[in-house]
Image 1 (spheres, rainbow, N blue to C red):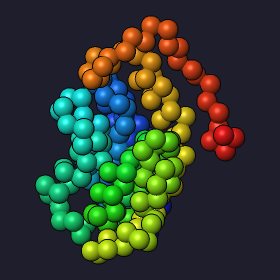
Image 2: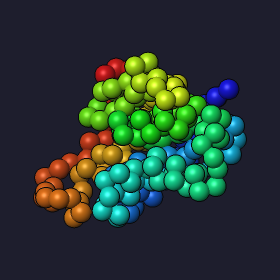
Image 3: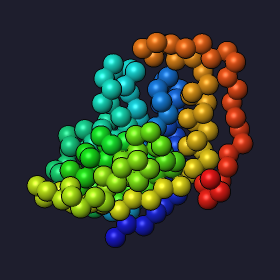
Image 4: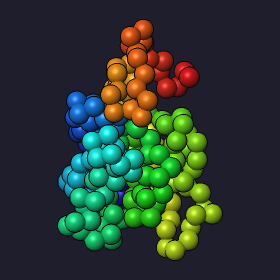
Length: 179
């Protein structure tokens, strides 16, 4: 049975900071076995690898699959700073993740409720894949601030870099339940 543990979300925030420090969109995650052991950590690496599929979740899944079988995911929970995108939500469903805890929603590409319900849509119950539990809002403010810091700075790796001289970092965050 899955049980939220703030220690693991803090670890995901640290990994997201590492992504930020490496000029990536600051998303970080940890996969936790049996509510106690971190199997793998992942951070976004699309800019670094020039591969748009190298999201934090995919990086960590690859690490796990190097040492474990796919059956281990039935006892694994994911802690991730931003709601999984459609691609990652689909991958998590296919591997049979047990539970996802995320920081902030992903209003453009979210696959766990913000845009699509990949995690719970019964129409996707094919080929042995089944849905998984997902809940957000953990360390919401920290996740939002990391993203805001990233999006106000220059991104030299963007396909068409935009000058952001006039952008200002907004530090006020409306609590999730008041949006």
